[in-house]
Image (tube, rainbow, N blue to C red; front, side, top):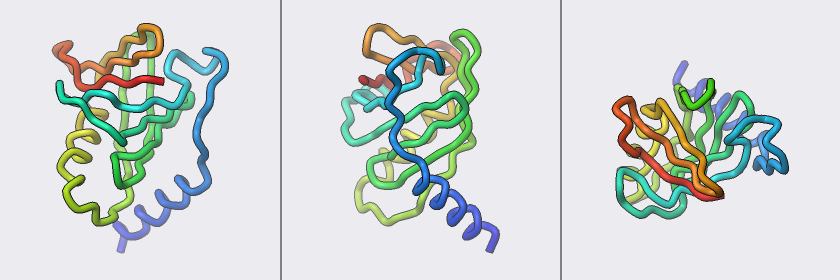
Length: 130
C-alpha cells in the first residue's frame, strides 16, 4: 500500500510540474531542459532531464521521474528518484540504465550547450544537449 502512495504522490507532483525553461544562469549551471544524446557510450533518444535549483524531473523514454538534486561547484548528487511504472515494452532496460546513471552521477561539466554527467571515477555516464 505504501508503494502505491509513493507512486500516486510522485505522479501528482509530476502532473503539477511543467518544463523548465531557463533564460539566465541565475538558478545554477544546469537550470534548463536537457535531452540525452548519449548513455554509457551509446547514442540514445527520448530521454529528458529538466532541472530547477532543487529538483530534477523528466522522462526515461516511457516513464516520468522526479527527485532531489544537490550541486556544489562541479559536484552533483541526484536522487533518490521516483518514477511512474507504466508498461513500456522494450524500453524498460534503457530506462533503468538511465535512472541508475543519473543516481550514480558525482560530477558534471557544461561546455556550450552540452552537459556531461560523470561517475565517481570520472567516467562519462551521460551527455545531454539543451
